[in-house]
Length: 373
Image (cartoon, rainbow, N blue to C red; front, top):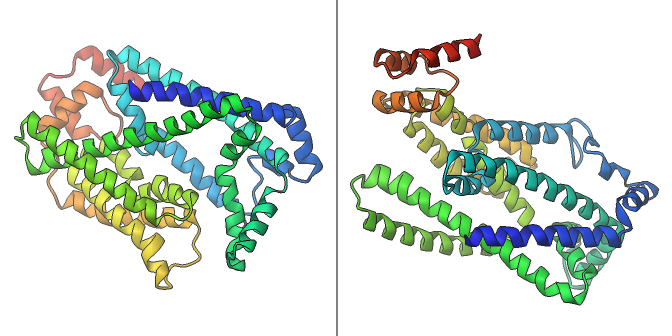
């Protein structure tokens, strides 16, 4: 309920602040005209590539983003927002309510992001010299010359917040600040619950103590929440650029579990050991490729999309052997899952066993055959 309330506050704040900023910039038409007159109309073109592999926005980076979006949509469990969204879906009273939440939530996100995007473009109109100003300020504060440019670019990371504090009237600044707090508390509480759920149900309850009582699981969840919270403080002290860390956490550090999240649904042989090895290996490999090896002068100069594909391949080298070297999931569990959800993909042995046990009704088999045809 707290997250629901915070979500409403956040949505209203984004619409109000973005709308105010767009109006201050002269409206969408004036924003487009200004960008064209100042040689920045490329910002309006999502296909303004700087080359196949070179520049700040190469086609290879765009292809990687599209690949991640398609795979994430297919796997439903490969993008960080989905984990948070799943908590809301699973708390719905009925399947119908959960379906409505998916469709309505997606529509609101599209609407919100559309308004948000126009407001960000308006930011460049309202503050055309802000990068230069920030760069000069950083240089005056003694920032090394080679780091001044990076410090200036970091202003884009908080551009929407800067616009809000600059254009809103004083009466709305308090609401805007409250919305910022709601944004952070909503995200923090959601992921604290999410992390504690993984530690409690998927690790402790599944592998360590399957017979644990509910009271014991509650305490494990509380302790896990505290550990994750303290760990987040450590991460926070290590961060220098929120954008690079977000890319690392959302995309790069998830590269090794992109395909496993799909394989667990479309391939009967992929088991929990394969998925667990993918998670553990990806955590270690991502740090190794992104932070540790470059500090020793190895694998330097790689773009984020290079690292994404490298981690995908390295992950496969680990989780596929782990899957084949361990036993498959119990057939009873697989049959129950197949009879309940009818997943697509490579489920031949499980489907035949379900048919042998009489768990699939004749009309269901006819429907499946017609769909396959």
